[in-house]
Amino acid sequence: MHTARSYWLAWRRPESVGIAILLGVFAAVVSRGPGTAAAAPSAPANTPSGGVDLVSIDMGGRVDSASSQYNKSMWSPWALLTGTNYADTGWCSADLSFPKDFPQEVVLSFFGHQPAVIASVVINPATRNPSANWAKDIEIWVSSDGPDQGFTKVAEKTLAPKPGDQVVSFPPISARYVKIRALSNNGDKSEVQLGK
Image 1 (spheres, rainbow, N blue to C red):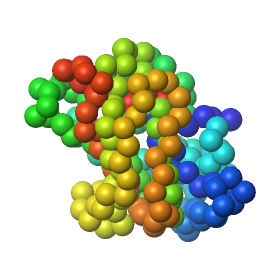
Image 2 (cartoon, rainbow, N blue to C red):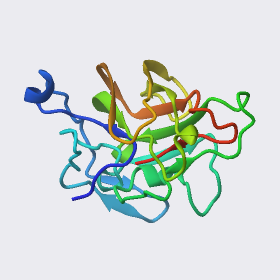
Image 3 (cartoon, rainbow, N blue to C red):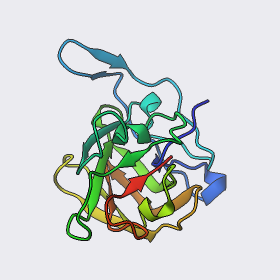
Image 4 (cartoon, rainbow, N blue to C red):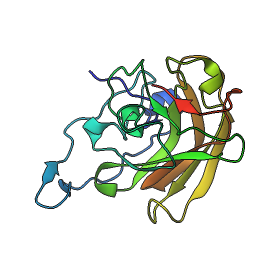
């Protein structure tokens, strides 16, 4: 069983939060580019927090954009979706000139850009690097219009500088895209990171 990386757009069982959040309707096939297709995911990827990881690669999640990336061979935002233990990496921004290069953003979407009703994002900011690099103040934005338009802020949180799942909850909302905006880190002047 895969464990989720930094972002768990969580559906929770009714007994765990008192309300049921629906996963949304997924198409049977999604185009992956000219001449390719992928079958719909067959089973939800469960998370340690009891939800379903709607943006895992196993569920057809994808990275639609990132404001920057440290380099092309590691620290990719796709590391946030794989479910593999990326204790050595995660996502890291390009070198920054703090604070003028904030916010840094990653936009994620669900299988085939289909809508889903979501009520939380679970983030673990820890990477192999010191906590000064880890994202601190974050915002969650959602859109049904596109990966670069129509976003509405649904939540904000200051993450604790410690490893572990940190839940960012908000009222249930239908969305096709989720943007995680890192507004600051814990003091490093060169980059911001998100771990598993």
